[in-house]
Amino acid sequence: MTHPGAFRLSNWFNTQVISDPQDLQAIYRLRYRVYCEERGFLAPADYPDRLERDHFDDHSVNFAAFDQDGRIAAAVRLVGPCLLYTSPSPRDRTRSRMPSSA
Image (cartoon, rainbow, N blue to C red; front, side, top):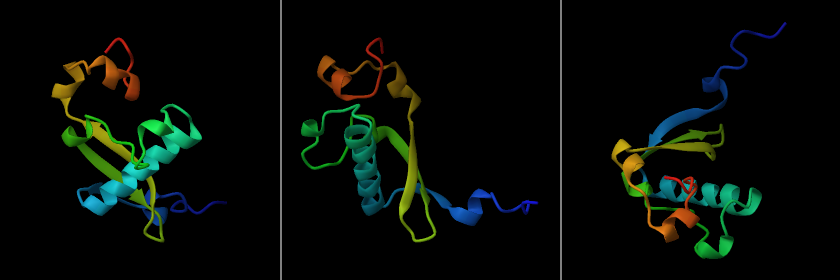
């Protein structure tokens, strides 16, 4: 029988809102690894600094889950609602993960 607390998120990860510039850089690096290298959604050549950032970052709240060694294991961002109704330029649309109908 598995102990009821064995799978509590807090047993494995510390989650928090991210505002520290170094932690934000770590999130951008993680996004680059996932979206450019692992999944191939974005062209690595478009991110020579190996940081995946876009026009939504200045209007987002970032959250991260840190593992027991203090490394970022996962991240998510919430984009401000005013930007959901703003269509990016055609150039940004090809670089962002937004659908082309946005």
